[in-house]
Image (cartoon, rainbow over all chains, first blue to last red; front, side, top):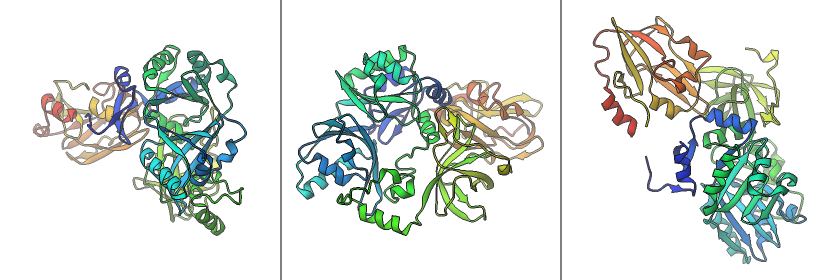
Length: 375
Length: 127
């Protein structure tokens, strides 16, 4: 099954040795699971799981105009990172018409130096896009790809404490959410994609196998892309390429909060289109759906209460934590949280409760099915 | 490598068939199939009395991430269904050739003629 074209992370052989089922994901051969997605999902909800996310690519941005470039290229405003080096920001990166090129986390490392972490599928194109913007404006920036680095995510209620011990960095106990610190060989951000507390550790490829071994010895369980997907969907987090693409704006992707319009003089790429869309106020929206019966899947049709088609499921799974079907769906109608819609599941109309994502937060469901939602 | 018992016969849609004698056949999905699907969370199999046709969809298998059709591996009539799978779909993952059996089908003696032996199925499962 080996594809010549797929790239390997530094942990490839480690995954295989630990029983991983490997799959091609965005050009990388990655672990799908190590036997059971459900067991891995539960380990992250209850204790701690280890994800190799080295397919996501660090890009270091520096130079006198680094801040200027990022304030232009990103919908969120990196000026928010000025005050405290070490702070991180989630943002979308847009094209001129407001469509989403990628989503990313940007860290301010102090002294006008930034580190961006890009999705596997878009990293090369994103880098070229940023370079083209810098060239077009004559901005003096240096974009440095970091193939020498990999990333391990340690996620779950006990993850941060275990990582602090294994890394020998007690300061992780006091690290704020969406903050990073750098100590010795490790760049550690309190970020993640599971809806749990945890950290993402950026380190040289050569250090990762030993680090993974020590995390396992401390009780962290290896977890694959399958669990990562069910965890992120329960947490209401979009997946690029599935819940958002260049065809949709942040407003249509439940990511309006990543659009910072406050600095009136910040003319970022896509701003005019977003302001026009916002003024019109009637575009598509991404909502959550929860089904008592039936499992929604990508591409299934969504109907409103009047049984008219009003949208489509972008991501759907059986939620391991909630024990029911959940979905993100792009709808053209206004479906308010608490309203009743439906999903066509293989020809059967299944009632669906409209939820404002997330579905799961701080160890509990964010909603419940009431009697009126009985079939 | 997934397990492929020598004593069973196989369809190219990844079902196994066990000849119970007397024109009765037990049916399930292979170890390879459950590996591909991942953790099963919902199984919809035909009820006793239902006629099934080889190669036609007769049910649904749903994992956390995906829904897959269940195909009938032979022509016949369902005489028994493993109702325990309703509450324990994980049996399909944990014991696909044992506790995770799906149904028993009554069929002609020739019904399984188109099925593969373990060696032939192993070639498909390797791909």
